[in-house]
Image 1 (cartoon, rainbow, N blue to C red):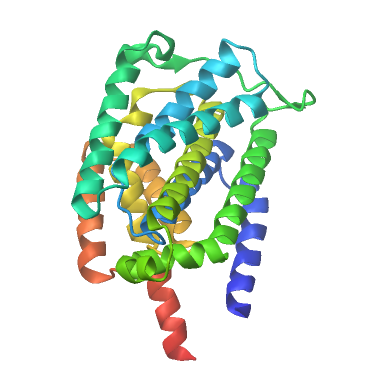
Image 2: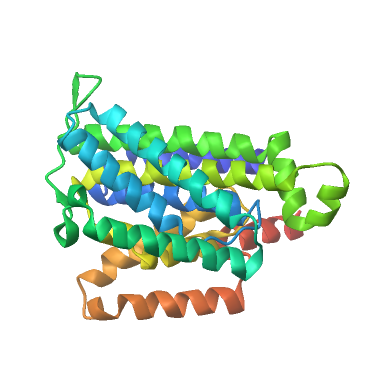
Length: 308
């Protein structure tokens, strides 16, 4: 427990001073995807539900946030919350259909629903089609702080990430989170104890979708752009990779996995392997599954337990 607290404190200090040494926009991209992966881990790592459709919530919230800020003229904070709420409603609709099945059937239903949403985004007039929704203004936080300044935008993004990360950690360690783990480990036993497992799974799915939407809306404000890439099935696969690489079922693992993937993408994009980024990520995925299935954080935790 003390080691964990020290690790979180060190990570917080590092995040606070990071913009001095690293380009803030790259750090904000990391925070957005770290939140996305942490939200996804809530249902995969603690609920045992493998969703291949989380890009629909991420991308859908990105579009709604961009439209709310650019067209409706909502303040940036309300625009992001509107996008997250839209993702939550979409998650409720998708979850009510998907949680009736388990395993590969659940994964395929979420993938199918996400593809339906993707083609809707292509044809919907408010998304800009293949051009995306461009020129989304960052505006002013609370009408005072100019978010056009990258440093101000970074600390706003960091505050949102920390609040959402705390909510996820609090949920995991709550009685609700304990029931989720019981459902993941042995659902028939949880049913025999009197728990309405479908209700718990639906609540977790909606919360995960809402937080994924929060990440998508935040990304739209950071890059002032919402595009089809945000809603593509590749994005769903990418968040699975981030979660597995960092450590499924750990609190900090998905954020670490997101950091590794974002750093690799940024490094490889400007080098001779720019066209081979998906292949490199695929190789990393295979190595992760074969060599250290617990992920980076999972392996570190196992090493610490063995040492002490």
